[in-house]
Image (cartoon, rainbow, N blue to C red):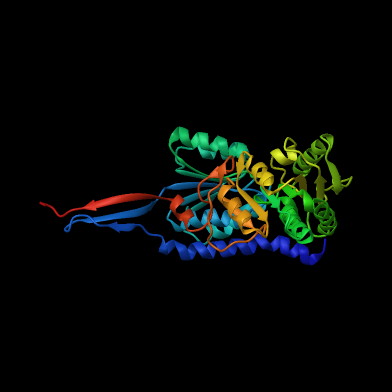
Length: 379
């Protein structure tokens, strides 16, 4: 791996985390309720208050930037926090939280190490008022059920199976570059990675050829997967597609010997029933399905149990409008697989979770609104 690429991968999450903490430090004092027009002699206000104790359960794939958002929003709104980093990346998560805790009042931020059982016990603890979880949908459903049972609030950003639609009127080379960025950045270990690609048949051949070339170049840019379990999971999805009739155009086979590197992979002729299209792969795999037209791509992209994000590459304004109106996801990106204005906040849908995960709206999630009516005595 080239040193410059390694530096970008290693420090990107740190810089994002720093920016997020600064953002919430500035937004915190601006978070407010509102006054209401009642009787002339009365005072009526809506006041946000801390919810209490927030359990923050963060993932291994982005242990600093994700934690910075949830910890920053919870703390700046006056809550106390118990943070459990992922057991698959514990040292980075703990080190970051310790840096924060050292600059806070004693007990404002506690750090808890452990695996999924520890997280389950924390989510079930009667002292916890909010459980904020970023991770798998299976874990998210268990947390939601537990919170519903005891009346706590669940704030969830869970799995995704994000679609990329490539329209027939875009440059296939450019589209392949976007697809590779979306599928291979951070070795595909990003919540909003491109997980399935629908390309209109008129440009499918040129697109897949260009994507295979991109995969070869990305092999020098990415690092390994988090562990052997994840590498085996990714390869199982690829082999399931091959057994179902798909073709590997690049990658598709982990190197023998130690290590968890998985090569950037392109899989063509995919079908909707394949694991690559039905489930979250979370690895450097770009599965491609050619479809007759944009309308078919839109229908198939929307037919999914997840609802995190989607991307559309098109020069047709009508197609872009139709896509963002109809795709049942929290975020739709037109002509860019990553990016967006600072402070943007979306709500995942269906199996991808519920509640805002970023932006000013996250401060609302971390607080409860109280209405106060105050009249003078004797009136």
